[in-house]
Length: 277
Image 1 (cartoon, rainbow, N blue to C red):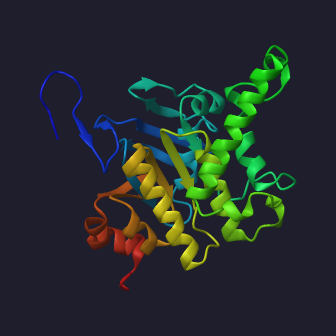
Image 2 (tube, rainbow, N blue to C red):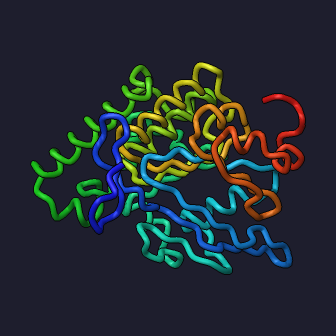
Image 3 (cartoon, rainbow, N blue to C red):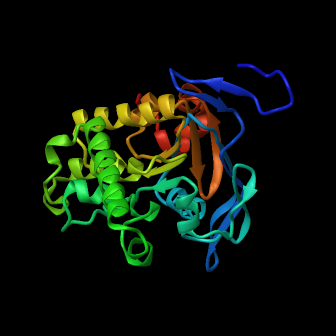
């Protein structure tokens, strides 16, 4: 790591470009209430480019609520959310998406009556030529160029995710594991800077979860994407993530490397139990 000069520290991961060590996404003292229940209580978290960070904890710990606050679906009652050091707490989910934040959900959100390829094309349409007034103002050759670029990008991502054989299949006909992979592919069709994955391996076979891990690792190592994932498969998290944050009752209980968190007696008591994972 080169720390010379006055700029942010930089490093490289794999064969990718130089990546800043400054946090790309931060939660600073984030709190969320549901009536009299405090779902999040002063949560702090910093996510850096090229990092895969796991977020674990028992049911009701506040994991999905934190995702909602980070992605703009729910506005915190206290604290701030920062993107590249800029306060985005009051910014909409659409604004955040257009500035490189992507998210998947616990419940599948695919467009079931569209093909797998078309699901990925739709995810890119905001960039121009996808319909409405913006498309009406474009000349026909320009619209065709946008369409061609989006389809080429969709095909590229599907190949990288091992889904190229499913291009023309309707998304609603897919089994759970394949549908989860298509959700991931759609989330990265327009290249993300920050990726929030909510239980991405749920319903997957061992082979599918290995493919998922490979894609996520590639995004982080090669493209510098910052990944935060919630997953109940603790063994999967411990294998994939360079850092793990544990929530319990809306507060950060522990944070560190996978080995440090796994060995923490507070974590074992609150979540992992005494069995070997």
